[in-house]
Length: 285
Image (cartoon, rainbow, N blue to C red; front, side):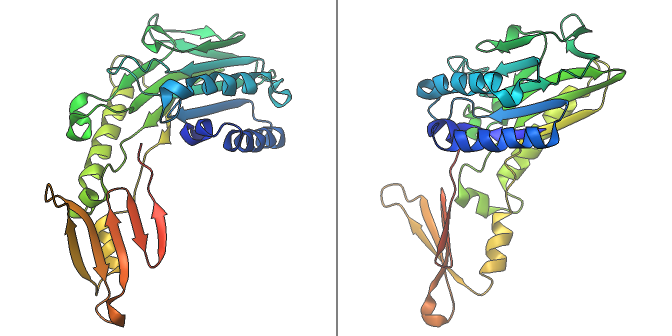
């Protein structure tokens, strides 16, 4: 089972993508798994309108490579319909079944029965009409400030011999503002992620279908507790608040050592941490 946030790899397709594919093929050839599940997030990248074509090239490369020739049954589900704001999750789920795997079936959620898996199939655009999966975007009131973003889950169900199980691709919320994340411990974003995860777990264990074991993997966007990190690193520091002149909103928080010439030891901005002369840049989804 692999999780892959695909956005940066598609933004620079000739660099990171080739590196990722090389490592992926080496892993497949080394371990020779019978069932490969690759869960992707941010299909199409940050600028998905311009980068969606790279997704097709990425999938074609996977399906045509020599390293994957023994995987004669494939299912690829790509949520590429970015024009549908209410449904677009930018999730992608790819499944590769080895030729030695004889008794494998996939669940049809509409017909409520398992079907034999044959051949290689790719589904994209409107996944809502595909009965072989469940896809949902989180309710709008779950989103920070009720602003739509590409977050949700995709579920597929499989049966190997007599063993049925669910594979769930998930993408939870990031910290939209480091300053807001610092204000409370745990942060408001942590509570939102917990609520969204609970939503998914409730959906995949409700009464509509028989309950089976499930594997949830994707991008949980877990973060360190910003407030506790600052209190640990800057326990004796003093804080300076810098505000924007036109709105009076907090622009950054600067923490200075009490001694040592009051050197800056930590800075928090909305999308940037600066700590002890080193910086960690946070790229938001």
